[in-house]
Amino acid sequence: MSFFFSDAYAQAAPAASAGGSDMISFLLPVILIVVFYFVLIRPQSNRAKEHTKMVSGLAKGDEVVTNGGVLGKIVDVGENFVQVEVANNTQVWVQKQAIASLMPKGTLKSL
Image (tube, rainbow, N blue to C red; front, top):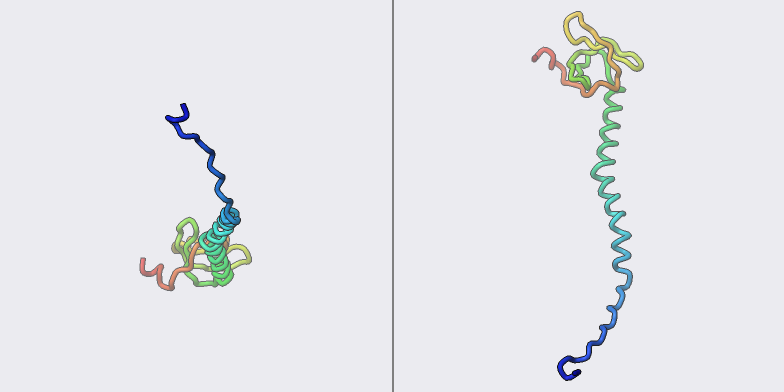
């Protein structure tokens, strides 16, 4: 019966690459860490440094917006808190870290 079918032989195993897949499996996590650093970690740390610099430079008369969205003018600056005038004869104490941004002079008058 062997004249109907030819004999089947197993093929030789393919030659192993010279560590190419090992190098790729090592480089992939390294590349991902580098991408995360430049896309997520570095910009966030830069924003934190800028915010810290802005908070340390707050002075009387600056117009600010708090994290809650309240716009006001700084009346007094303490060590951890600032007193912000949000309306005529209405002042609130706010933590310095709760100041979101410094507005240009004259913003309150333009509203």
